[in-house]
Length: 500
Image 1 (tube, helix red, strand yellow):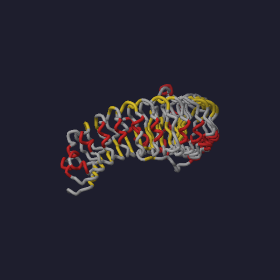
Image 2 (cartoon, one colour):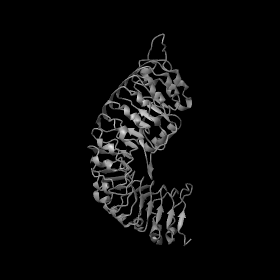
Image 3 (cartoon, one colour):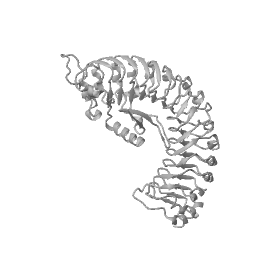
Image 4 (cartoon, helix red, strand yellow):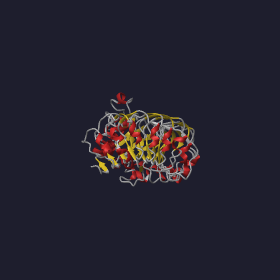
């Protein structure tokens, strides 16, 4: 055993017990993989092995998801030859000491999903060989300073989300030439984004969502010609839709939801952003008409324009979204290393982070605008659509019987409009296992006083249309939205993980 170089016991979830102090005598051990092993001990009390001769040989130390608790022992920060350190998904406490600067050989450092706190020490800049730095889902606070990252010229993946970082976004981020993913979402960053981005960087993902960022979108951001995913949702950005985005030719995901964008949605989106698969402009102040040209986005399968001030009729061309017609679609949504492309979907008034099933679903949400006119029959050409929400508008006319051919439809909400006539019996042709009785629930028709027929009760054309019995009891309830089959399973699992 004295000559052992690699010890891999990872993912043995039924293996348990403390880290043996005798491991410290394995003077040739280079890789120690205990990921997923139920070590379940106070780390500070059992850090002894790392003060032995193993400290001179160890290159990879993997202790993720091992039920470690407490503070990291002092001798741990003396493993100066380590190249990979992963102690994520534990219950570790305390701050990162300045001694972390001694681990200058590290190219991957993962401290995510713990309870670390305090500021990010300035000595982290001495880890100049880092390619991945993951500090997400902790309690780090204070500003992210310019000199924290200035020397990390090899950094490719930077994960800082779900912390308490404040201050402004440092200019040094613009100078990281090799970076692919920056996720700094769900912090307390404020001020404007720096206007210093340049085409020498490899950025494919920028995620600044859920901060307090104000101002507009920097003109230089589209000089990042490889940028595929831009998340700026849930901030305080106030601007018209910036013309500079015309140059973001490679964008696949654009999420500007929950901000203060205003003015019209430009027609040129369909000419310039031809790779778009996800366009989320939910909860802004966009006004004027729905641009018919959006339907030229042949890859678009998630369109959310809800909760704006859009008016006019729904263009007939919105039945031509090619990707929404297909059950099986080719998606270019990227998952970059530890970053999974994601979007928030509103389900029954609750938001769920959708990741795993995102490339598979097709959604159109035009709810809570000022749209009028009839529902275009052409929308029934979207045979791959999973969810259609047209609620909270001023739509009139009848529901076309052709809606029954949308066999993939799992969620439908037409409530709070002025629709009339008989609810098409063809809705009941859509397979039961798909919609889980969604279309048999009267709440999806609330507010359409001239609509009649099953599932609305006491309603016949001979007697004249009446409202549903019991509608008054449910009219203040949340809009009905049940998602069936795999759509439901995926959303529930991801939503549960996100909010527990």
